[in-house]
Length: 146
Picture 1 (tube, rainbow, N blue to C red):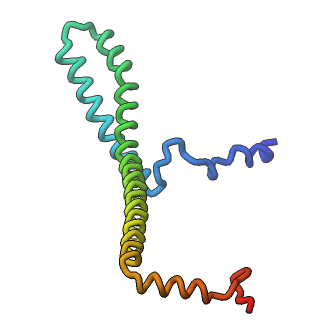
Picture 2: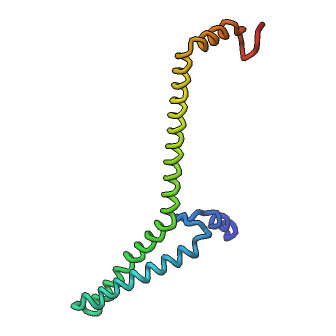
Picture 3: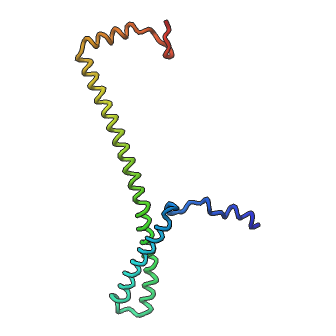
């Protein structure tokens, strides 16, 4: 029975909920640990030396309560630092691509308008275009049907 469940419990093909690239796990863990220790240092300093009117039990309970908030804040800040930069880069890339596409589309439209204005100002060109249309053989399916 354990062999049957081995395939369903295999976690090698699962994606982490944090989506931190595998190559960054070591750095992610290190930065998280540093932020967590700094946060707990501030919280401990506040609970032990600034709020000095609490009893020992109240201080321990406050530290136990604050450990979750410091841990969560550390994970969020670390995650935003790693994945947030990639997300901002992706959004900027999409924005630049969209602006480039708009610029090309506007550039084509301006170019076409300039050509139409130039052709309209040249009667000899209009005459050649009209003659070419008259002398063009009829086509069907892009083939010359003479």
